[in-house]
Image (cartoon, rainbow, N blue to C red; front, side):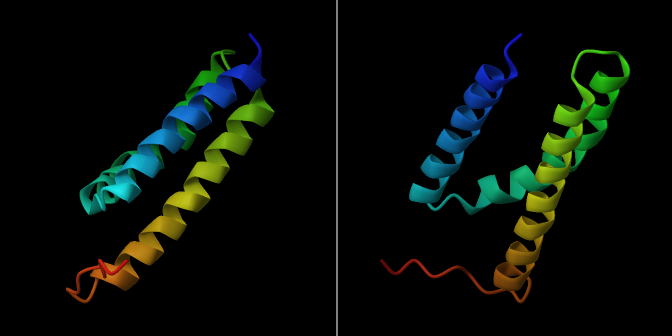
Length: 90
């Protein structure tokens, strides 16, 4: 399997979801991603253990997703942790 093609499809699909949710100001989508993104690294670890994914790919993708999840959580708490709503000015 060509991992570059797989990664391209994955990035394009996730990117499309993020662009559309950003354009629609879908704050609930951002919160929903915070619920499932911490599971990516353990799932990739399981796939690596069974030989379905290369170790470097699993580690790189899992750590990247974990770091961006923590970054998103930090921003989410700064914007919505005090009970404020996001600015909708254009």
